[in-house]
Length: 120
Image (tube, rainbow, N blue to C red; front, side, top):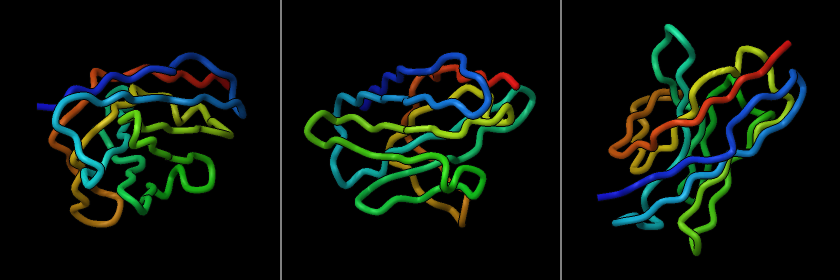
């Protein structure tokens, strides 16, 4: 079993930055892909970024968001810069992510989510 706890969400004005953190515990391995999804109101949850050695990003966040991982701390981070109102969503940490096709992924484990609100 794997537990994921997110932190770092909040409110920011457009153009600002936020950094999300996700601490993992349980049976998580460095070979497991970890990352982030988000769900905006009335929309499906969508893939944002993952990391397992190499990184992958959704086209909507490339160049603005950076994912990183500290294996010693079992923690994954998402640095979000140049935030836009359309980035407003609940952000979910995920573990054991599998890419189904470019930009589409699924995961075995999920955090509880953290709200990110970007005002214009």
